[in-house]
Amino acid sequence: MKLTPLAAAVILTTASLPVFAASYTVTEIPVQDKSQNHFAVSIDNSGLALVTLQNQYNPPIDYRLIDVDNSFFSAALSDPDAVRNQDPNLEDYSFLVNYVRTGSSNFSVLTQQLAEFLAYSYDGNEANYVFAFDEETSDLDGFSFSMETTVRDSVAGTHIVGNTEGPSQIVEYVNDNGDEIQFVISEFDRRAFVQVGDQVTPLMPVDDTLGGVSTINSINENFEVAGSSSVSATSALTTALENCEDEEIRGDQPVEACRQRILTIASGTSTARRSGLWVERATIWTLDVEGNVVDTNSYDTLITDEEDPFNAGTSQAIDINANGVGVGVSSIKFGDSEFLTTTAVSFNNGEITRLIEDDDLLPNSALNINDNGYIAGVRSERINNIARSRLFVLDSTNNDITFVDGFFSSSSTIPRAMNNQNIIVGVGDSTVLTSSNERPTAGFIYDIEADSFSNLNNLVACDSEYNIIEANDINDEGVILASAVVQRPARNILGELVQDDDGNEVLVDTVIAVQLNPTGQEPDTCTDDELGVLERQGASTGFYLVGTVFVMALFRRFRKK
Image (cartoon, rainbow, N blue to C red; front, side, top):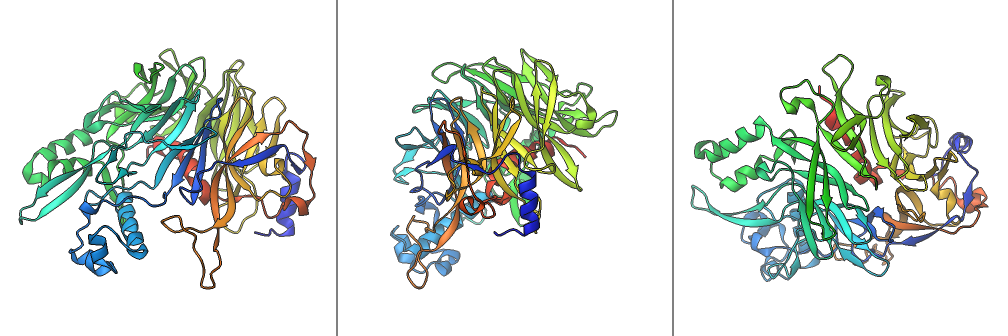
């Protein structure tokens, strides 16, 4: 998009450094044959890269759950007989995939489950499916790809950690009218895991009522992992479970379907995951080299005057360094009021400690910590009546805190990772002026000791086709894993090229994961024409919602009206 001269002037006058290029070479993570869009997640010191794929090509259809003779399907399918023979044409196959994905996104218990997001690792030679609890079956001729899996981190190229859903099973049920109905029931809702080779170990929550819930965010070189888990069930959950055991209250459905429906709530015309079922607390698991759990420690919140632990809010560990110090967020009461907000905290040796004592800086959250004791996080503040996330760096050795303006003073600037060379990478609003509420974004790199903040788009080749919208991780070698937007030919559900009426390829904006490799050379100055500075300022925030929703949700989920 071309910017007005005024907007261009604002960008150039607020940039931290001159327009540079050629400090990094760009390499694509080779998963383009698996999905149109894929997002960077992390890269460890061995070079193992983790990515998230959206809507993988050629997903399997469970034809056991497709009743072709049903009036809905018979009216929608162009060739029902071909579907009955499990050989649909492209039109019908696309319809079935969309039908299943819609049902999955709405947590339907009557359709096959098919994940929108899947995880892959890349070791420099090949990309491998991070299958977690997925299994190969003869019914689907391979993996089900049914469980939404988000990888979060890895260490030594061997231990991959992430979060996933439970595997599904079909429950046969005959209702009061004598109709046979197949319900698709998940074993549990959300669970953290560690995958070491082909061995997958669940990281169990402290309380596993209705499966409980556990999530993981990071792992250190000593195989300590930081996240959160359910520590007790709320009264809402126990009451709902009791109702499912009562046939009159449960109604005409199997008890398994009733239990699963506890996990969701209607939201307009769709269905969303229900909150408030468990009391959740920051949890740090310790693993052995095989990935087995040898110790589990949970931490309370900073609210200690509530008899009901649910009213004390929640806490979550987001990162952990090699010294075993975790950082994250905890609920806290604002001043003398009953209003709950969030504050950055550390978790160490069984104690939770508030990191920023100034109430005027609430709410805030700690997102990263390195082995040198630097902590990076965000403070949420309203600028021009709009909530923005402002990057801060805290030196835990002396409690000095520095706020970083980013690309400009009102830019939302979110750290994604920090290495032991005290370099932070992340994502920030790259443009002050925009005609919409969504600002274009760009990946950044920030050197704490040099206090230098740079747009990564200014540090790649002048003629680069890649628009880096977010930097997701950096290892101790300075290699960065990032998400970029690039023009690529559109592909259909099978991964085949889409053509227009004239037989030409259709180009679309595509998000891909890229690796930025430092050259060790001084950057060269580019002209505006060479760099395309007005063209490559960033993509709208919609492209990286998968990542940024996590940070903003931290503030929303910890607040209480």
